[in-house]
Image (tube, rainbow, N blue to C red):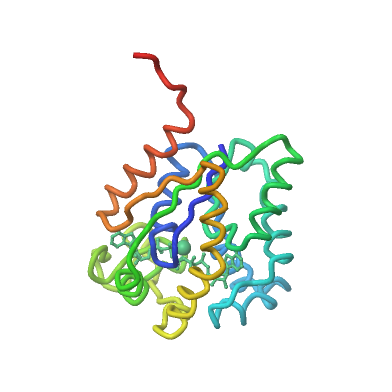
Length: 222
Ligand code: AP5
Ligand code: MG
């Protein structure tokens, strides 16, 4: 199963992508996390991507598409993937179709998590992330048991540089301008499933899981 998890910055893609991929036995492929890992380890790709991430701009399509194509070749992706943060532009969406076509696959379902702009800014402004594995918290709505420390692995929590209010606003603008057409692209193909992201984390997970199940289970006659 190939799942494209769409939603604006702060809508909860990362929060939901990990647990969903575990439940359905899919690889969680999050392009933002991949870029941040390259930056952390100082690769050539990381050096190229850094200024784009810090300023909230998109990394050029050809660089991003090459990175994702390589990732889809890894053994853990053969069962299927949840793509989080990709595709974000129409050229990325068509490049993904071509890459999947080459292997006789296609995008099966595209849940799109909707959240109002005010709530997105509130979530980005209060987000804390663990350095070791990217576990995500929110200072008000999903706080860690001990401030500044990850509940799961005890590592330090930090705030992303691109979550500052100015950069967060810029990222939202880019989402509506460049990723809006991607939402329409999948809606036109009948693959889009709208999910209300302004519910509790558990309720959003339930709705996403239902959207994935609906595309995988054969319809039963009554
Ligand atoms: P990326 O890392 O993908 O960031 P993003 O799309 O901006 O999304 P975020 O990670 O900010 O939000 P999220 O939806 O994952 O929300 P989260 O679950 O953390 O990309 C970063 C950068 O990389 C881009 O700007 C670009 O430079 C580059 N890049 C990446 N992909 C690219 C591409 N394809 N092409 C080109 N460039 C690319 O949740 C947010 C907060 O809300 C958390 O605090 C969480 O605890 C809280 N929360 C979550 N759900 C709920 C809920 N239901 N109720 C209350 N709080 C909640
Ligand atoms: Mg994320």
